[in-house]
Amino acid sequence: MAIAPYTASEIDAFRERGDAFNRDMLQEYYDHFAGFKETLDIEPIYEEYEDLTRLETAQRLEQAPTELWRFACEGFLGNLTRSHQAKAAEVEATLEARVDGESFPYRMLRVAMSNESDRGKRQRLDEERIRLMDEHLNPLYLDAYRIDRGAVRELNAPNYYELYKRFGFRLDELADECRAVLDDTEKLWEDEGDTLFRTRLGFGLNDAKPWDVGRLFRAPELDAQYPADKMLPALEATLTELGIDIRSQANVHLDLEVRPSKSPRAFCAPIEVPGKVMLVIQPIGGKDDWEALFHEAGHTEHYASTSDDLSMEGKRLGDNAVTEGWAMLMQHLVTEPAWLSRRLDVPNVDALGKDGAVSLLYFVRRYCAKLLYEIELFQVEDPTTVRSVYAELLSDALKIPVHPESYLDDVDGSFYVIGYLRSWAFEAQLRDFLRSEFGNEWFARREAGDLLRELWSVGQEPTADALLKDVTGAKLEMASVGDRIRERL
Ligand SMILES: [Zn+2]
Image 1 (spheres, protein in one colour):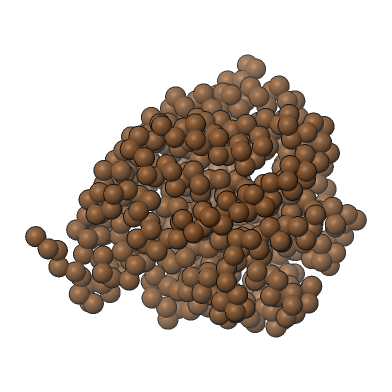
Image 2 (cartoon, protein in one colour; image 1 turned 90 degrees about the horizontal axis):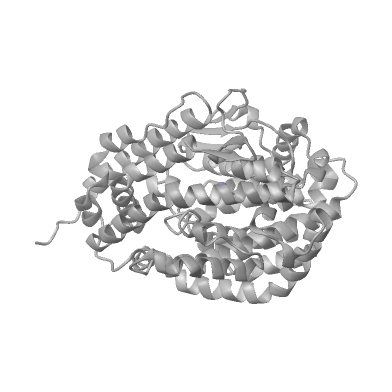
């Protein structure tokens, strides 16, 4: 029996319910991660909005704007595995590891590893992390994968990969571009990665192990250049020069309070777009923390400047490469020599700029390989058959061994990987444009701020490709990321 598509007024009602569902979810995430409540209670929210996640809802929206159809499909799938998600979060929050007679919460193992200067201890921490994950989390992930796989067929797609292609994700074209980036930057990573390992850790890329990577990027020697007490003033001064007074933005809520269980990492929760956007910070200092704050501030200003007149999908859904692109534009200022010279009194701006480029190179290569892997993963019947493919693709890209056990843990779902990949290209090309229009210190020009606010106001209605084309006339290309990296090396 054919299923009647939603009428225009039913679609509007769905938009309103979807907006409220997002609002309630984000409020709950905010309350939990900002340290107001211990538990993360998303199950009652799923129950309250049960009408949004029915199979029939997704089926009836197939002819509606794609973003709404995708939102309904993701709701349908997410709801089927919500107990798995809750269980995985609980396991992660409660597992304890014992290493060298010392006890570590599972979620702190990565942090402990990157703060550990003793290589043997790092190895023991990592091996215990992997053992616990394989024993306690992989069975949950595997079960959720199988449920998803069956449910996708009810959405009339043979598999998850084909479903996302129907949503307009250009996965194969992007995979081709990623292969080209991997080829094109292979030698560069071998040389620059090797130099960075030797300088920081005293051995080359050939000897690097999985437990060394976090330590490499932790770089405690840079902490002095990025002190905790200068973080927020640097952000405020940067925004002021762009014409934004963050303290007077009525819809931006800066949460600076110290709470014991507050997330140590900055995050943005766009509870209402554009009405109520939370920027949550607990400044610790160090390059990582600065980058996280600027990244989240990019999301915050984007959502807070989004026009209230847009549709729900234009404000909240759409192409995530757009909001990630705005976040990257702000994040990369932290390692931009021109910005460092202007904002921070540090002696070695070129070294910091180079450092930023090598980090970006690592992450871009990692995400390129992740996309190639996820395309395989989401087509197979039995994911355990591609466990070794994960390790091969990733270690081939990074020239560092990779644990095959992470083959499900290292997957973001919804092909979010392409949001990041394309956001790097968006940032590289837009930054080029801003520099050609406003000069190398574009971030200190009021006119650049005016342009950004105008671009932020369209939310995520246009895709990153359309937005870039509109502003610069250029096509979004992954190759631009390689060029941006080379500029500093
Ligand atoms: Zn982000």
